[in-house]
Image (cartoon, rainbow, N blue to C red; front, side, top):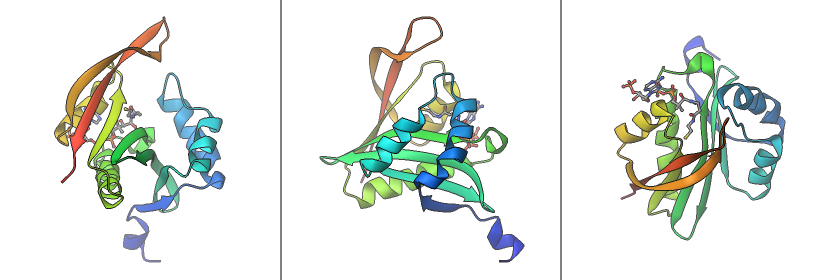
Length: 154
Ligand SMILES: CC(C)(COP(=O)(O)OP(=O)(O)OC[C@H]1O[C@@H](n2cnc3c(N)ncnc32)[C@H](O)[C@@H]1OP(=O)(O)O)[C@@H](O)C(=O)NCCC(=O)NCCS
């Protein structure tokens, strides 16, 4: 493969064999990471789980649940070394594309109020904040609210 093609990010279906690499990222980027079991359950439930690789290296991944015309983005993550290089935006574009192709009319997601980076990404993408779920997330001291965002799809 040419060097140029090698550097083009590739979107692939997440498989059980990806989970060591997924967990290595998950454990360093979240204060309260998903467990391996959360990913295994998502694969078993046939949620839309994808990896995003550059030159074979895992750069990011997402888990998207689709049902009854709605998509719910459960996890979107970029490895620390690759953050702030446009991968989050590119991966979110793939999320929107897959949700639309599979018939979702809108996408919903939750984000921590403390996660201003993700909020900025979603806002730039056209997501609107529509609700607050009180005490939704575990936090280092007690619980943290979740901000609910949505994006209507055409
Ligand atoms: C949030 C996350 C997915 C963004 O991915 P990324 O590849 O770093 O983002 P991009 O480089 O595509 O940036 C897109 C936009 O996101 C926002 N953004 C990303 N990182 C940011 C940061 N550290 N501070 C402020 N804004 C940030 C900016 O608005 C940015 O647009 P800009 O480049 O025009 O400023 C990534 O930081 C991540 O995986 N964080 C940990 C896991 C997480 O919080 N996931 C979301 C849970 S809801």
